[in-house]
Length: 556
Image (cartoon, rainbow, N blue to C red; front, side, top):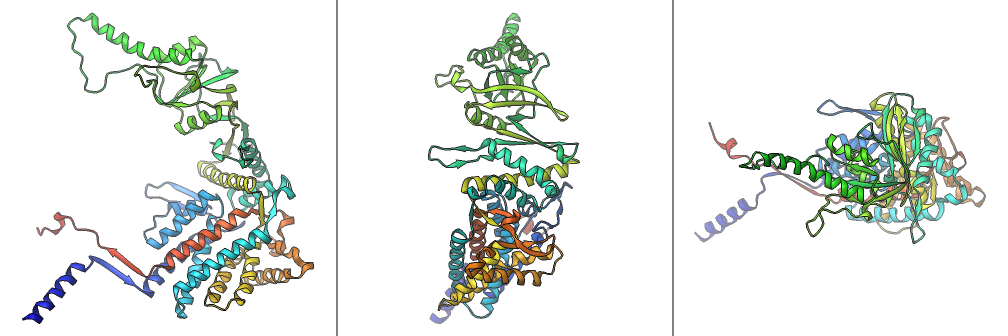
C-alpha cells in the first residue's frame, strides 16, 4: 500500500509539471535555428554589393515595395520563427546605429551559426565555440582600429563623397551616385555643429526629405533651410516675412464648441447670441495673446477656421495649418522656440510668453518644382537643410529616400568618427588572414572556433563575387594571396586591396575611393557575433500550445 501511494504521488507531480505544448531539445533545436537563420540570410544575400538585385515585396493589402535595403526587406517579412526574429532585430539595430551594412550583418551572423553547427557535430562544446567567437571578435575589432583604418583628415572632403558613393553603389540611385553623393555631403555639412566638448555632431533629423514624383532623379535639389510641405492658410496673407518670430502650437485655432453631450438650457433667447459670441471670442483672445507676444508666423498642427484667419490677415502675419507634429518639433529646436501644447499656465489662465517664440532670418513661401513650399531660412539656434527628391513614380521616390538616408548616415558617421576603412571585401579578407594566423598561436579549444570565425568573414567577398557574376573561388583566392603577402614591409599597402566587381579583378580600393566608415565594420562584427552567440546558447525550445477558448471546448 505504501509503495502504491508513493507511485501515485509521483505520477500526480509529473502531471502537474507537464507543459501544454511542444518541447525540442539538443541538436535538433540547434539545427532548426541554424536553418531558420540561413533561410533569412538567403533572402537578402542576392541584394549585397554594387551589382546586387532588388526585391519586390507585396503585403496583405496589396501595397508594393521595391527595395535593396536589408533592414527594410526583413521588416516587411512576417517572420514567425523565434531565432529568425533575432536576425530581423539585428538588421534593425544595425540600421539604427550605423544606417548601412544591414545586409552584411545578417549574412555574417548566419555564416557564424552555420560554421558553429559544424563544430558542434565534431563534438566541440558550444561554450568553447562561444568563448572562441568572443575572443575572435575582440581581436578583429582591435586589428581594424590599429591597422586597417585611415583618418578622414588625411583624405579631405573627397573621402566623404567617396563614402557616400560606396553606400549608394548598390542602390537604385547608384547610376547617379556622383550627383547624389555631393547632395548628401552638402546636406550633412549644412547641419554639422560642434558641441561644448569639441565633438562634431551631425543630426540628420535636421535634414527634412520631401518627395515629389515627376521629373527626373537629377532634378532633385538641396534647399538651404527647413522646407515645410504646407502653404499659408489664406491667399490674402503675406508670402514673405523677414525677420520672423515663429510660434509653434499644437492645438486648433477654431471656434470653440461645447463638448459632446453638454447641454445649455436658457430662459432668455437673447442669451443664445451671447453664448455664440463668447465661443467666437475665446479663439480671438487666444490669437491676440499669440500675436501680442510678438509672433508674426504661426505654425499649428490643427486647423484654423475662416473667422480666425481674418485676425492673422489684419495683423499682417503668416499662418500655416495642418503641419506635422514631427516637423514642428524640429523647427522649434532649430529656431530656439518651443512647441506649445496649451496656452493655460499653472494659475489656470491663458498666457503666451515671448520666450516660446523661435527666430529665423526669413520665412517665405516659394514654388519649388511643382509644389508650393514654406521655407524657414537661417534659423537662430541650429542650421537646417531640406532635400526635395524627384522621381518617375512613388516606388522609385520611396527607394531613393531609403538610399539617401543610408548615405546621410554614412557621411554622419565619417564626420563624427573621422576614420574610414577600404570596402569591397578588403577588411574581411585582411581579418580572415590575421585570425587564421592568430588561431595557430593558441593552445586551447578556442583555436577551431577562431578558424571558423575567419572562414565566416570570407562569405562577404564570396557573395559579392557571385552577385557580380564573377568566379568567386578565383577572386577570393587572389584577394587572400594579396592580403597574406602584406606581412612583408614592402607590400604593406596590400591591406587596402579589395574587389573591383565591375572589372572582375583585385585593386587598391583606397585609391579607387571605395571607402566605408570604420564604425560600420566594427559594429557589424560585434552585432553579428552577439546575435550568433545568443542563438548558439539555445539548447531547448518550449513552444506552448495556444489556450483553447471555452467555446471551442464545448461539444455541439
